[in-house]
Length: 320
Ligand SMILES: NC(=O)c1ccc[n+]([C@@H]2O[C@H](COP(=O)([O-])OP(=O)(O)OC[C@H]3O[C@@H](n4cnc5c(N)ncnc54)[C@H](OP(=O)(O)O)[C@@H]3O)[C@@H](O)[C@H]2O)c1
Image 1 (tube, rainbow, N blue to C red):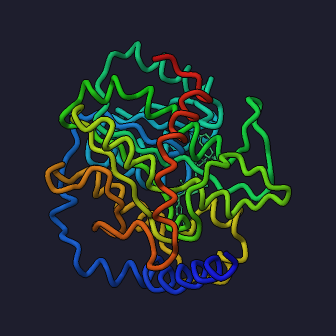
Image 2 (image 1 turned 90 degrees about the horizontal axis):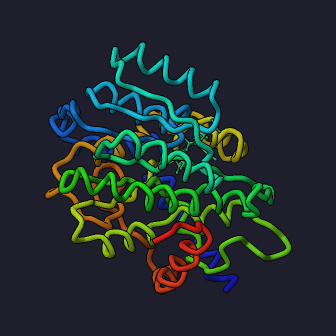
């Protein structure tokens, strides 16, 4: 087991340094087609969670600049208002609205969904971007470990509750889940809240930010006309990375991506015709990417997803 873990870390480091850095983006961008991004979004309703900062902010700005009607979901009113006014100022798009919601709280997510339902609007694009790497074991007011609460349970609850509105936009509806290449370093586990004595936030983040839920949704809802995609932004210089991974941030200083480069594949996934995309696919730098590294023994663990989804359903306490 120790050797497998060492191998995963080594393979991830080598693969990541070559591909996830700024130089990786510059290299991959040689194949990008500029016309892919020349798509307008007037008349489309988009939701971006965690949109006041980092990659979520850049995504929100990118969607608003293309004319989308945009709902930015932020947990802090002041930070949300600052982002809202900046996005409106930069893009000139007044159809941008702030929704205050703490994704770590299933009650808050339910409140958001119930408020949103009164708008009676279709949702064309849901970007589940809100996420964090909390190094300490923090427990939410609902009793959940914090990384799990935001990265998994809150995201699950948000997506499930948005399904009726996504269905209204079908077949032109999609969900984009911001995962992380960090998933390559760990298998999926049913120990959802990291019960081991010695808490490891980085390991918990790797267990959380994966492709398995996206694959499950793509399969479960394949008849509903909703596309589900997961993606990795690469290693981008964001407030989140600076706070959670200060050493990593310092070591790679100068070779981290900008927030716009981190958001590039999210925006690309939002703009492409669905026929061009694979529902359930994992994307990186505008192309499908491997879901597992060679010999990393992470693939088989994904069979646990069915029972995990049952548990998420019960923990989220969503009716139906
Ligand atoms: N940057 C990278 O290199 C990288 C690599 C792989 C994956 N990612 C993923 O990319 C996404 C964006 O991360 P980032 O690097 O841009 O980090 P960031 O700058 O910290 O942005 C994260 C955003 O999520 C929000 N958020 C966190 N917890 C929330 C909650 N409980 N409810 C609502 N919003 C919440 C944050 O709000 P506050 O400002 O209020 O905290 C912030 O707006 C995350 O899902 C992250 O896991 C990033």
